[in-house]
Image (tube, rainbow, N blue to C red):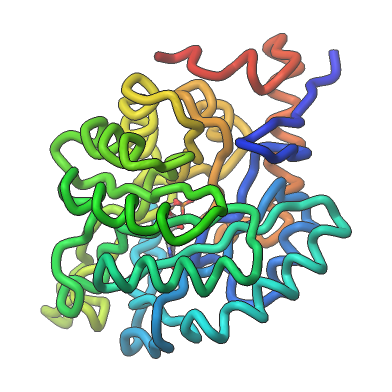
Amino acid sequence: MTADLTCSFLHLQLTNPLVLASGILGTSASLLERCARSGAGAVTAKSCGPEPRVGHLNPVAIDWGDGVINAIGLTNPGADEEVPLLREAKQRLSALGVPVFASIFAPTTAEFARVAAIISHAQPDLIEVNISCPNVGDEFGTPFAGSPQSATEVTAAVKAATDIPISVKLAPNVPNIARIAQAVVDAGADAITAVNTMPGMLIDAHAARAVLSNHVGGVSGPALKPVALRCVAEIARAVDVPIIGTGGVTNGEDAAEMIMAGASLVGVGTAVWYRGVEVFSDITTELAAFMAAEGYATIDSMRRLAL
Ligand SMILES: Cc1cc2nc3c(=O)[nH]c(=O)nc-3n(C[C@H](O)[C@H](O)[C@H](O)COP(=O)(O)O)c2cc1C
């Protein structure tokens, strides 16, 4: 049996469920095109905010063996500069039939709406609303993903500012992620991306100091996978919108697990670090082989099986 990896997501048809996660290679149209040519079903740009940001001082990311911890600090060129980047990406990737997702963040609800309106000029296929970056608390305070109330306010404001479908990106470190998911869906979210990185810290015992300049950062990669699977499953039980399941997916079997937890699409971030940009075609091949061996003809036939 040959497995069929095509899938539909909102109004879109994808050749496979793998999506480049935000913040990984999504800083130029040519890098996004590279991921698409390497087999990504869709790509997400790096989050952009209202103004240009330099981000944190080095060191900002490290692989410690079981995953990666980063505190890049939302380095980005600002929404006005992001529009031509997204336009170019759309142009290059529409020829390949690969959708382009924008990603936005902001320090206030009003600024979220303003950034969404600006970015909409580029007509991305989806706007991911990053309310869950754990690495800018000193400047921005607790992420909006931390409470149903603030998550609702941002979602409603962004929804009112754009006609483009939105996916709200949630944080894993909340007591009840299903409640936050329900709140953003009630406020108009078309989809949910789960999850962002998990706050963590690495210490160099010999130097007796934190490794990252920001002291704390977000954990991603294999260490995050069980947390992400749990979050996706809890969200899938609570709401009906499609989920972009993200966190620790490194191979085809991980992708199958994410779909069995209820994901419609599967985000791939840190695995690009481990396996290179060919990771998309590699995971696609592994997923197809897994499905053929286990007797799954379609992505839909695997979805929610583990719930
Ligand atoms: C270096 C790095 C930068 C990231 N930057 C962003 C970002 O700008 N916006 C965002 O929503 N998520 C960002 N993330 C989070 C990823 O999109 C993803 O949610 C997370 O890493 C979990 O997936 P993974 O284990 O496949 O990497 C970043 C992650 C890493 C490792």
